[in-house]
Image (tube, rainbow, N blue to C red; front, side, top):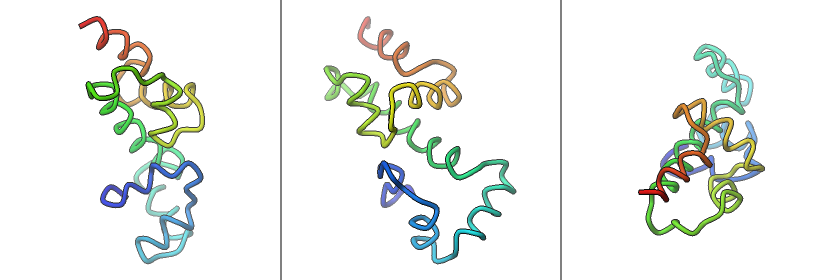
Amino acid sequence: MVEKRLYLRKHLSREDVAREVLTNRTYLTRALKVKGLNFAQFVNSFRAQYAIGILFDPRYRDASPADIAEMSGFATVESMNRYVKKSAGSTACAMRKRVLKD
């Protein structure tokens, strides 16, 4: 997942991930359930971490929230903000404002 950055694919499916880890989607779903996650939560946690990295990267200082969401594999800015907030305690947009202030 990390090495190939599968999470950056906007339309990533369970089948795609299962194929990469040489299993089937049923076993993948069960493994995630044991961790207390569904597939979307699993993938979006990686996307959120990637988005946070972009927010603090000076090369992307002028990137809009929509651009960051797209680069991170999220379908919408709202979705990105929701998962970034779960991961870091603050929305991506709020983080961005703090970063740009400094």
